[in-house]
Image 1 (cartoon, one colour):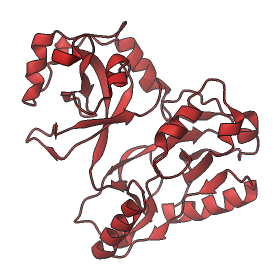
Image 2 (cartoon, rainbow, N blue to C red):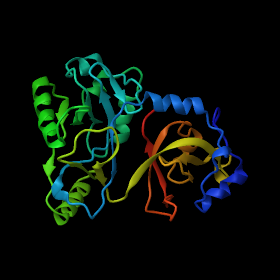
Image 3 (cartoon, rainbow, N blue to C red):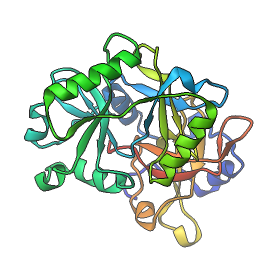
Image 4 (spheres, helix red, strand yellow):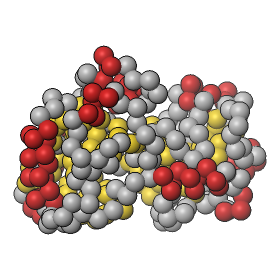
Length: 295
């Protein structure tokens, strides 16, 4: 764990009860964090689905377990804003307009596609199986229902076998939504995305774009590595994470031995699953899922 930011072992106990980490106790590299934030493109980000909402107001698609990729009209980028090393033939025919989508191999193949698209030197044979699944047109005018129709036209005009539109279907009611979620998960899908049909495109976390999964997950930024104890001595014990609202907590479960030896770097964004929240809004029973993307 060389080069990491380490918090003394004695401080780890503060997290076991969900107590927020004091701001002045974090020694993370502020310049690294600021550079990462400044580089990120403006994209719509999903909130969690709330059961009191009306599914009939939304278009519904499968939540693809891929790597999010932003095409700015000339460069394919990770969600962080870092350039993505795709083969020249993969991007040569992409339209000269912004696209937002997922690089996808299929259900249950996140680790595989993640390894393919993160190589600095792309392996062309591997990229032949990758599909760029488009779900929005960043900055485009009109409600989402209209943008969804535009995506179909843009993809058809491009005529690239690897460029696809994410299928959308109109919502009806809560009972049908539960059935759709159950069927999607049973077939190996991760969950659903609901996009309000009447919503205009707007960057940032939005109540017009919602995700629905059997077990909720969220993202947080790595501020520091907390040292392990016992059989994890000399390795990662937990990640000190910061939520979008500024609260901090330690995430100590869900890691493989390899991830504890080489943990997600400070400044990276990680995804974690959780079951519930404390009264202060911190996740309960949180477990590491994956690094969002290389930083």
